[in-house]
Image (cartoon, rainbow, N blue to C red; front, side, top):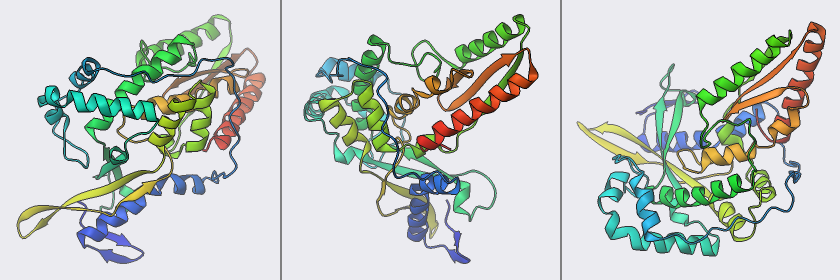
Length: 342
């Protein structure tokens, strides 16, 4: 599924054509979302450096023991990327592949290059609801190489160590961070509201809902923000190589003469966003929006869990609340315009 789509009034039911159209549709989701909201900006501002004299991130070499430890964290799932090698298989033969994987990872770090063959994702269309022949009613589910996840986890360990050591993370972000969760976000939210009530203020919350937030990120702007966090030199080269020129195919299954067959689309290149289904993607989004709090905190108290954002404010005077809320919301909107977020 799906085996039939309606395109410009025409019915398409040839499996390869359906797969190709879905791939075209998926790779354009971000640009189309931005265009619909008037947010395509080809001259995005260079991020200002808010952190000075930060030592550069060094992707120090890994060891076979660390690679084994990373593999041990994987669940033995049978799903696999385009190479057909699942986490279940990798875990079963980890002792046999630990040496070449260690060598590949270390060469990747030293050269500042991410292996091109690991930058291809396999995408399955997942039906949401509505008309099954409408491509808009399918959500892309991306599967990336297990070997990619091994290297990404090694990099993530080094990246987080750098961020924590130099206190570079916004403390209002509760998503994907050690010691934080939806529970800590809720506690922070409730405590802030209670503080306002105890001060006899009228509390107010503005909830922001982004569209395709992880898909819309501009790569060059993200790389600029990473540079401001001390990710320079070979580490910057590595992240640039990891983000740029990523590709994907769509695979669909269909019935042919009573047997289930699969067909793959042509390969397409993605030009925006962080890789869906990846290890680094969520953290890269958090780093992209790491400067959001500093933009709005003069007007309100921001709380974030990944792309879920709340702006909290309060005052005894309802008129002041209304004015401050408008200012805070407009500031958030301007931030989104400058960062290709909708």
